[in-house]
Image (tube, rainbow, N blue to C red):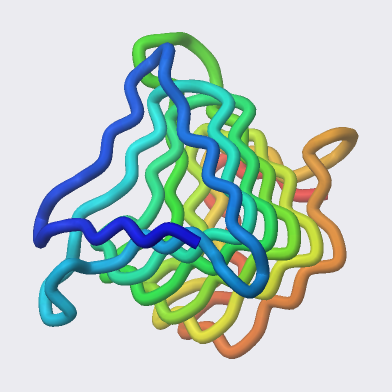
Length: 173
């Protein structure tokens, strides 16, 4: 259970050819938190492919996680207390195509928007998305399902204006 304290307005950027593999446990998660409890850190930007987070906590960023790559896995993670987005995805960094992300058994809460999928293929299963002030999930030019991009058995509750918001060619199955 390592703890990574991130300074105010600073980011961790994983460049192409690099990746993070963070393996915590239920009792001892890997924590990405504020070094100053009163000030937000910026983001963890995943430009490199194949990042894996098992039992990780992302707490107190402006955008906690920014996915711009493929084959990213978040298993039993908590993403919370982001000023804007708990997780945002967009087109791949320095490559063509959509980003890819898998979230299984994750908790996303207390952000402005819990999950913002822009130009992404996402698999979201057995997750709880709750208590986000504007929306739980926003999908824009993204696909959630079918096939390997499953969207199933999720609990979306107590979010602000929208629980699930689909915009401009967002597709959910």
